[in-house]
Image (cartoon, rainbow, N blue to C red; front, side, top):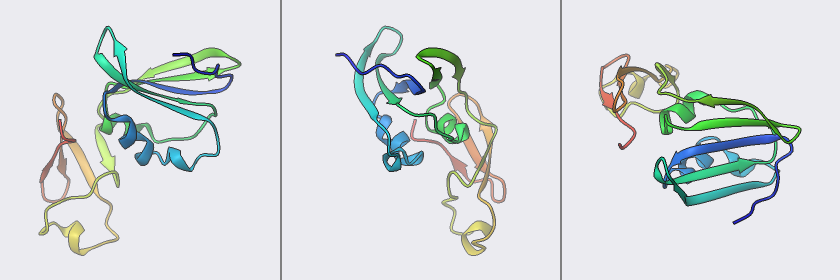
Length: 141
């Protein structure tokens, strides 16, 4: 399968198969006015199967959200048709307002203006704990 050449843009590679839609929603990529390609279940020698997103525009995004959704993602920035740089993501140490605490007794459930703060408690698989009540949260892995 051939896809158009990207002159200036971003490629999100090594996405776990089935997670591309979650990334599009989290980064609100569907609201962009540019060309975007979403490839699902692409054959990969390293991963078996993977998803891939190509964005034909430079955008600002929060790598923290991406690192939480799928810490194995590689972000490739393309300028003038050439790879400018690559960044390998990892689980972020802290999450602010990316997820919400599910504990109904947590202070964040009653005090809506308090930031939702989570700290990385375990690296592999990533487990986050609410800073206020210590409730554990994983991303479904």
